[in-house]
Image 1: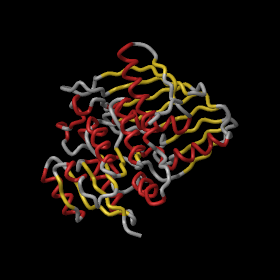
Image 2: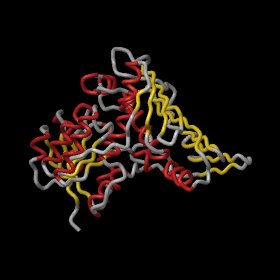
Image 3: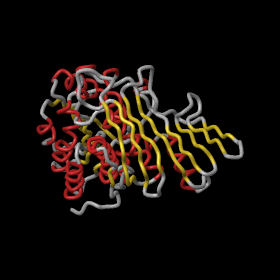
Image 4: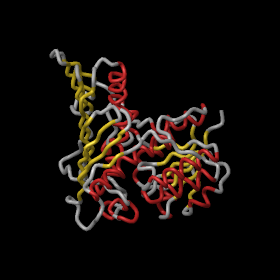
Length: 348
């Protein structure tokens, strides 16, 4: 089989530590083009992977040999570049958050449908072994009624990881639009939707308290309610100065399920009768362990192209997870709970 030809737009940390490594390791993919506004970065990556370097993504999109595009850019460019790629006849894997508004997300979905191309959003939390096992337990009914949850994603901040450090676009409002909520919170809104169903109501406190000289959010606590009436908390933060927290706890009728809440056991099920079951599964991918663990996002995306199947995180799914974050921002601004209709569909 001829390999899927890949173009990666944006040569920052997420491309270097996830997309490029995983495309290179996939037997059905071949990196043929990379693009970055900083010519030296594009040239460096192009030489490393035997690809062609571009500084203008529009010129890259004119390359008819390219089958798929990874969009690894600042948040404000996710939608316009994804739409341009879809209109150029390319399948698209877009980093999260997929867009910065509901309208942008809908335009991306419509473009994918109109051009009959795959649009997938890079929410890797659905592929984590402990999360998939937890979903099996929840869907089996063995846990009984789900009462509540808490989910957290926090670390010291993107300056610890971004290729530009403290000068990163993450702290620039015009480019980021959304801060820790878009960087980390949207991962957890997607996870909770994956595990427990759509979110129908959101309340939130959103603050900029940990980082200086920026006006993007760096600390958020949300209250969420699912369509099944389950209530819980979501926290997203760039202020966890001593390390990261990527844990989720599900409180159910028959057990408490702890996900990524223990350094050794990725999943711990504490049954009501006192029995404790510990699962030593594949570790969740972290920024500190780049290249050592596979996010499975790239493999799943390429597999969906090869086999013409629908990916787990479609544009529609990405939009719903984004809407939770946008509702949190609206709640903080209006000081009201925000109602969501996540059952609606986009009509092209």
